[in-house]
Image (cartoon, rainbow, N blue to C red; front, side):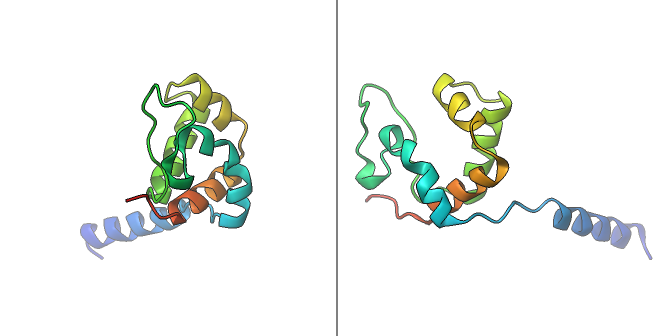
Amino acid sequence: MTKTSLFIGLVLALAGSTCLAKGDAQKGKALAYTCTGCHGIPEYKNAYPSYHVPKIAGQNEAYIVNALTAYAKGERKHPTMVAQAKSFSAQDIADIAAYVSALKPAK
């Protein structure tokens, strides 16, 4: 076995062991009710139009998981998002990500 094939095998083995938790979009829908006020998922209507918030409907699922996890760890700074993210388990985050990533973005 060459060094290259050994390296590729190791990378593939590690990649398989670090998969994202499988999210349940139905559970995510129930958890994401607090997201709609600011992120305006239904038709992107924002309850607080005085500042910009990202539109998350249709966003990449892994991105949502990474962002919420970073807020929960304090690696991303926004008081409201940190508080929200800290209230979620890793499975909750996966469920929310599954739900919002499945939504169609507004045109």
